[in-house]
Amino acid sequence: MPDTEKLIFDFTQAFDTKPEIFKTPLTVHLFGGHCDQFEGKSISVNIDSYFNIAISPRSDYKVKVFMNKENFETGIFDLGIAVDPWQSCIENVIGTLLGRGLSLFGFNMMILASDECLINHSFLTALACSLILAVNKMFTIGLSRLKMINIFLRSNNYPFVKICQAPTMYLCLLGKKGHCLFIDQKTQHFEFLPLRMTGLSFLLFDANPERSHLLEKFRKLNNDSLTAFNLVKSFVLNLQRLADINTKMLHKYVLPESPSAFQSVKFLLLENDRTIEAVNYIKAKRFDLFAQELIRSHDDLISYSEIEDACFKGVIAEARKSKMISGYKMLQNGFLCLISDNNNYKWSNRAFQTHVWLTGREPSIRKMNIVSGIESF
Image (cartoon, rainbow, N blue to C red; front, side, top):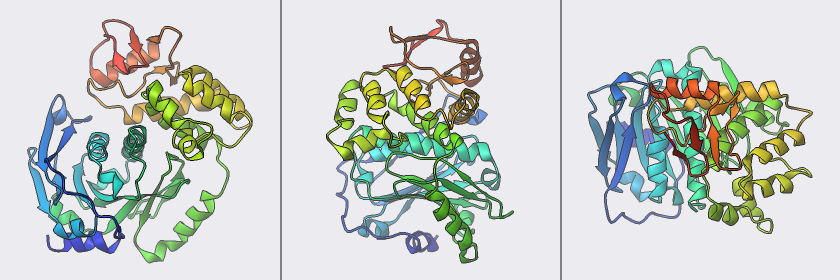
């Protein structure tokens, strides 16, 4: 354990602003994902501002907490979570941290992943989706002073001590635009995925300097134009969280005269003549028109079949197998279900079947209140 802090600190930067000590303990709620052992269960653990935490779902729900005063002195917080390939608790944990203000000063989160996670594309997609939703949520509640969040993805199977000694891969949320670069440290295979988000971008890379040419390729790609899939993927991931923002928040963050506020909710909207019109639809909660406007703005890049396929796969990949699906909008004929005039959505067969697949039960009433995010079952 003595090398833990050193490993983390070597690859991060200190922040000049030090956080205040919390008056009350921080509670992190861990909700089960697609693992049978997690279904219907949750874990809570109290930590204070001096601690980082590691939660291991494969050790009878034992929670390990490690004191790390060194990182507190530099203004950096560390959160370690041991995750299963289909375990989708990331959003809850990060959201809790962000909600308590850690994001004001920057923190590090170490995700302890088993080897199969690194080659499981579905897991990586779900992880990225959860992080995007969490950070987008942070912006909707007004925490806009974020400096940096570093996500450390380690692998060498459990337990935590072994993982700390393993070769390290890093998932960093850096910059203001870009793609996600996934590198498999065993096969050297890599691919770029477009995961654009609010003010931050994903970058997953190996610390090995011999692979620096991949980072150069990433930098080059980062300056290229978005492809159809890029745009669709970003649209799918961001519109879900956007649908949960109430009118007051929309008004606060989508003011035409405020470029910075506009950028916070602009998400993937590109600079074009239709941008303002699309944003006006957002302000009016007409997400259906917003979607249509976005498609029309880029009809030379996107076909409906691409949108349909990407939306269905993208949403399902990160949807949780629990009753807490209100934050994950169901699909209508493969597309995100968008609010209608009466704010209620009648389930399509595909969305209905998806709900059954996620929750193991049928909705008693085939409609959902999309605006409030409350299921009407």
